[in-house]
Length: 378
Image 1 (cartoon, helix red, strand yellow):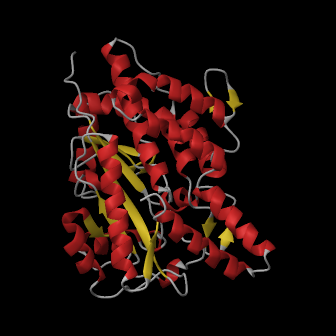
Image 2 (tube, rainbow, N blue to C red):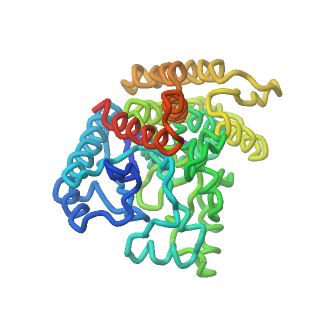
Image 3 (tube, rainbow, N blue to C red):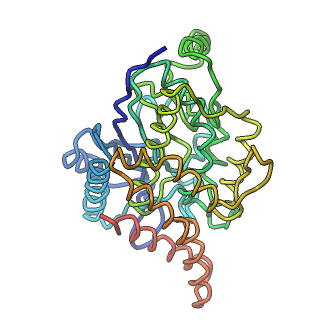
């Protein structure tokens, strides 16, 4: 069966935490006019998130990676400027270094009220942020097919994004503690593998008829067919603190999908591995990030992440060139060299302790570091 060529259009959503510049803690109850001021500046591209201490931005549909970068840079800068008027700052990190979830308040909005009621303590613990990347795959059957194949690469992208090593003032030992929090919710984690769009829809309809779901927006898998747009939506990643890292991951994702489509067009395909195997790499990326490698399933051994990254970059080289984002994709080597946000947060914390700071003051210094890095590449 011949599928229409996808547009490979792009969209990105980023979620930020709002901190008080003096205390460096989350602002559980931000000023009344903050969101209105953001909306006046950014329109529908900004919205409240589940917690009042969060704000979400979302780009328009972009035709290429340079356009995506320009728009997300504009949105990051706008949130920082509006928040700065109230002596607040956004931080692009998937957890706050020391904030207590018990002190947070959720946004008074129907969808969030229902979420709080249904999920109880699990929802109240959601002091986490993420980055989501949408890629236009307009054909339903192709979207489902590519989702199943792309699952293999999700741990590779997660490892490049990690920004949540702390939770409630403690080093968790994980590079992405956010996933540990989010995985407590139902309908999270790796997606099921479906043979067709109709099979997926049948399963979804069972849950909708049972009254468990209103619609597919409450399927929160690591990658999913968007319920609102004809896109595949990447959801596994932490939010990178550096803008250039976010753009790099978006570029790698769209190039990976294009590579898989190119294989399919040539009557080839990437092997779909059982979730049992992919889950092990997901855990390794969550626990170690870039540091301890992932399993090569064909060889049955753990390989250094650097080696796997070079294999991925080689796989998508043609696609990166044709999509005009070879530079952004190559930035993955820079991430590997300097580390992710999680690495830099831990290094900042250790340096502060070495300077004589007590643990809380060291964590405050981490917040200052995050606030600066969030706007560093604009």
